[in-house]
Image 1 (cartoon, rainbow, N blue to C red):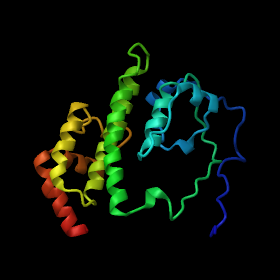
Image 2 (spheres, rainbow, N blue to C red; image 1 turned 45 degrees about the vertical axis):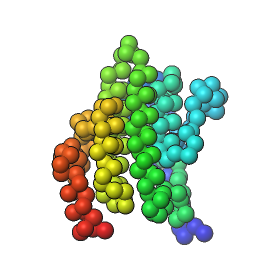
Image 3 (tube, rainbow, N blue to C red; image 1 turned 90 degrees about the vertical axis):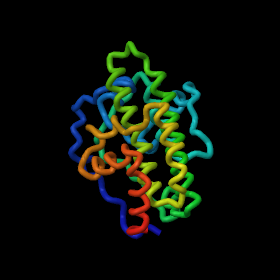
Image 4 (cartoon, rainbow, N blue to C red; image 1 turned 180 degrees about the vertical axis):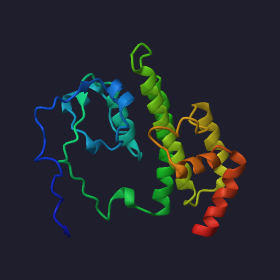
Length: 217
């Protein structure tokens, strides 16, 4: 049952249809804008998706974050509009609201998988594209965000801290750790900076997580 009516659009009546929407390729779009991970933010031609051969990774969370960026790196024409017409319904039974230890831990491991998937994606960006450097920079930030939020989730999970060194070692191999490219235009503020300071110093991680779990959990 819906407890309240859907909110009315904030700007649909004041939309200026004479305003030209800027069309650009996906690599330029990523370079210019912090894009949303969730696929439901976008309207995408079915034929384009079929022709790319890109599909959701079955059995993994963060699969839409991977697919969205993969599609953007292939698309030649796309545009962004601020028209407020989209509504997303959050259900109490939503899988991402599942707090069971098994589900919570799976999301952590799937964040790690997403970080590795982005390593492969970054290698596909053509070096001769005029916005390649800026695109790669933002993709690296997104890649390191998976590692950052994985670490945050570890603080609230029952996964043993003894698993952390192996995870970090794997992230170091793909330049997803230390988190040197996370803080910036897309993620900033004292909270992010303080946690990155701790996460980037391996000797501090275990005692910090144990202290957090002792006082908070």
